[in-house]
Image 1 (tube, rainbow, N blue to C red):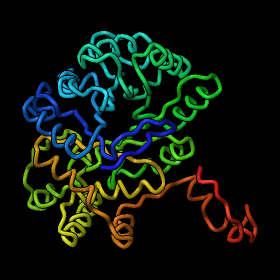
Image 2 (image 1 turned 45 degrees about the vertical axis):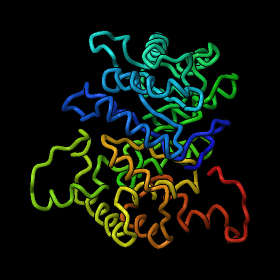
Image 3 (image 1 turned 90 degrees about the vertical axis):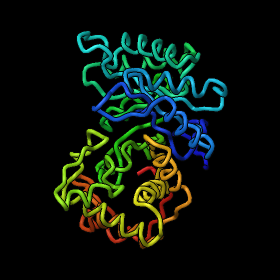
Length: 353
């Protein structure tokens, strides 16, 4: 395991992040989880491989995930980068038990600290943009919890690029704490963040963590045969049906072909593709598991290096149209209009675009 600086900070995090959404069984059939004993075995495998970055949330398994994580890290609390989230509802009948506003932030942080049995949270994520709380209130409130010592860094998940860019620009102008991390759904099946979110993160030096890096399990290849044989399947992830379509199955098939060539598993190939994207920005896959076997499989991606030809095959089968204005501005016609005949002659070092 190697380590990366997370965004514009000196915080060192492992190149894989352990997602703890499956730690606990409180969600029942909504999302199959793991018992405390199984969760501890998964945690130990990750830590033994050098992992120090743990991702949970205040609502995962109705709070059980935070409790388990707190117990697991207690004996060596300082060595771990502990990340948790707030925003999603903890009481559906209370309008202030959800959202990004100051009240929910403060009560959520205090509740998480109690469940985690710790004095501080290394990285607090805004779990989702709520479209109601003013950006000024959000970032000032986050800065306040950092100044209180309860939180060290902040990040944001599931938000439009314009929100993150405006928040960090405002933070810089007002001397408040910026977002150092961005959490997005990103995989070979979901490359739309390449339109706005990833260029924004690159430009502002924000570290990226990718959730659902295996596309609801579709990239593992386990659904291809079942779909082709028209068998019913009971996915472990409730999002899986949304990923199952002809295009995505064709992507999964190419992943399987490369896995066969390398004598690796499809999951390892899919995770390795994400790690190879780090030549453009820091991208850290969030790997979740319900069993030791799944975690061992995920960790096997650390030893896999894809060739340029294999990367091209994966890119070709999964590429998307960036749309306007990206494709328009990068067209030969526009480059000629903007630069004349001089574009090939210009050496430019700026990598923020």
